[in-house]
Image (tube, rainbow, N blue to C red; front, side):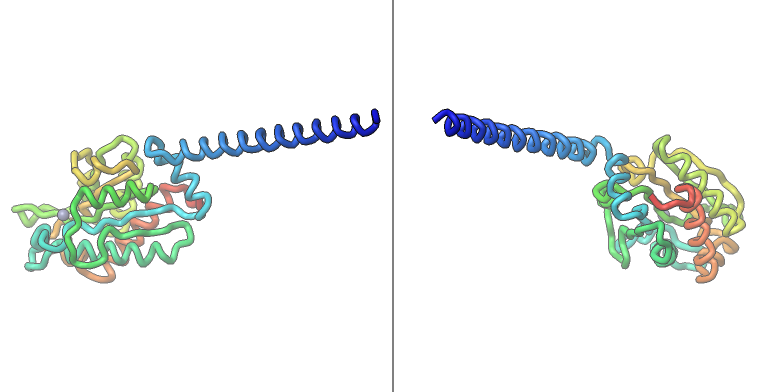
Length: 237
Ligand SMILES: [Zn+2]
């Protein structure tokens, strides 16, 4: 009966080996999903977006038209409201970005509704966007004051601010009023590279004419997109 007993022993060893393999495979899978889970945690949004971007092959860009609803923003020199101009320009940027295979654009509002600053930043953070661009128009008591200013809050947003600012100036030809630090809530709450551009002065007749003009907006939008392509090195993720 020795051969039968040896056979049983072989079967037992084989079953134990199978159990060991199953356990080993489970452990490997379990540990690797933990690594992905850690990358996906809120502590490292940039790591997560790079994982997601590699899957989609596109950079997620949030375009934020300033103001809206009961918040009209600044009055323009000819009596219009900032919120209508920011929406028109943001929509133009969105439409042009849609045509670009490098980008997946999002708007924080697509009509005349009020969205809180907290919700705008939360939208960008939840999406783990690659860039957040808030669009505004400036105003001042002196109608002679004109030009473009771009703001950042975190140091990790300076490069984005510099590049977009430079391309907006190339597109609109306005006076360069600089890239500046500013403790703006919508930027401070953002965990992704975030900037706010005051593209021009709505209180200045010459700036206003270009900012409200459809062709002018198309040029500025193209400048912002050129800036994004430049910032991301002209390559998909
Ligand atoms: Zn504004």
